Length: 284
Image (cartoon, rainbow, N blue to C red; front, side, top):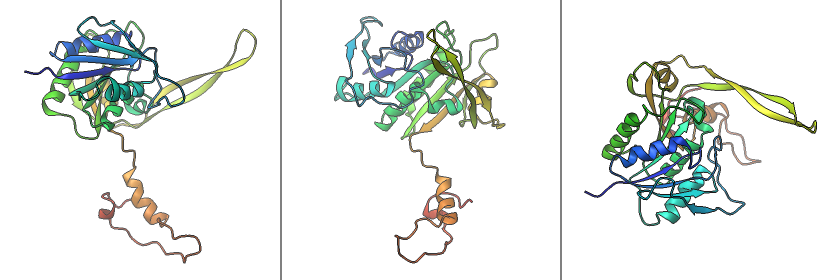
């Protein structure tokens, strides 16, 4: 049988331990693996792309002769773009995987994540995509328990596909004495970072600022990714790149009376709007 073609990227850089574990895991599935990853850490870059400077692409044998690997000077989203449109050209990956990230990308963290932005860029291109993250920070994070869960999710994706227009956000609990309870489908928890900037002085007494914060989970639901991780489940959240807040359409059409007439035309009083006009519940 033809080997599946799997494209691998990340945001921690091509030499990070997490991407090595991911490459080894998908190789063990019998896949042909192509890697395009940043040449330096790109954590927190979100979905940034490079448009004002040149991209550099260099072949890197870091994963051995079995793997065609490149390091790219750009962001994770750049890596997927250049892989799709230049390196692979007329070849279509059967799956795109990103990670394994050093640290959680659950809840609101997905918005800042370069790991998930690589996966979402693939989804924009119509490719099945998954971002993997381990809930442990630092270069010495223990990935030893992650392979079986990464392999299981990838096998399901190859066999059954990923919903169109989505990328799966998979977060794996930190390794501990308690066995992982299983895989759990979840929604993104409502949470935020309580942030502040610490003002400091450099050796020349010039001020600089360091972003600091504490993660606050505001969601008491038992169907969220944060609940799943707290209870030692691997969480899977399907994420979409359509950012339309569909519940806001009905509110704005009614409370704001949108669309408003052109300037100078007679104002039209607000009219009730049927929910089916927008495919959403009629909520205020």
